[in-house]
Length: 64
Length: 331
Image (tube, rainbow over all chains, first blue to last red):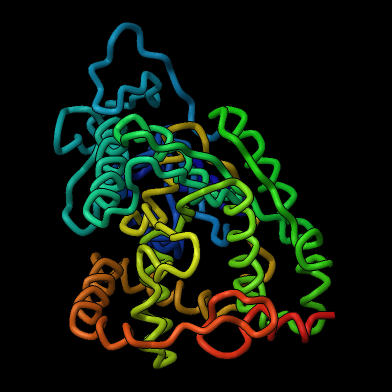
């Protein structure tokens, strides 16, 4: 699984399936402050990611 | 920047949003279904546990905004609503939603007003974004700048006093919005304040022990002194706004205001986000607490005398308004 982080860096993770919530927790993100897409589609926090998914974590910018 | 791929559905979708563009569906059994249909969920409401597909999410957000407007009488027949459009995500979503809801209102006009404070490396991008948006929605658009109104940029005014940025900017922006709205002939100013902003304000006013401000800073905070301000997104969370924009392909990865790091609001934001994550519904509960306090104590402030500023004539609570007091300190 390929993970694209808000700072535009990229990280590889194992193929084991995890929920988005678990993934965010492991990476230290607060689910209230980010949204997540899987293979280009927005998904809820209890969706499952893994295998060859490309997961993008987008931080919600503030101050607009 | 467009992050989500979209496809075009052929024929009538029968979607609750009436919008034909949908994200690529990834139905693999790893995606919970929408609580209202069997489409893949794109969002889960952490408070209720309900899941929403794209179309039902958009319909839910727009329905709640309409409900806020109606229950609080924010927009009346014949109103000219000027949207305070910074070009950031909140005001962008506000413009899109009000444009979609416009046919449900009787003889209401929309326009946009943009304030260019002069914040280098930040406001240029959002002003450009605002220009593109109003062109797309074909709305009248008026932009006013701090140099035009006050003789200098915010950057120049804040040299050496950066920690005061939000207070200084708030006072100047308030005046600038009023001037722009008057020039546009508006009867209401709609701002993009969302649930997170409102909950943060409640918490900050409690931390400061500022009961009058807690009671005044409501969804419509004009008190009849200025052009009334309305906050149609006050019950829509920042995350919901981000998802709404993403689903419309309207999400832009814009920079954050460089002065935000100095604000108490930044600390309160982080604290509330953590609480909301651990205890879903915290922000909404803060708003409910405020409403209860308003119901009990709101009348206490009604008799406060309204003066006219001795220098500019604007309504204020003392002899000199905040703007005239501030102007004496600006370089």
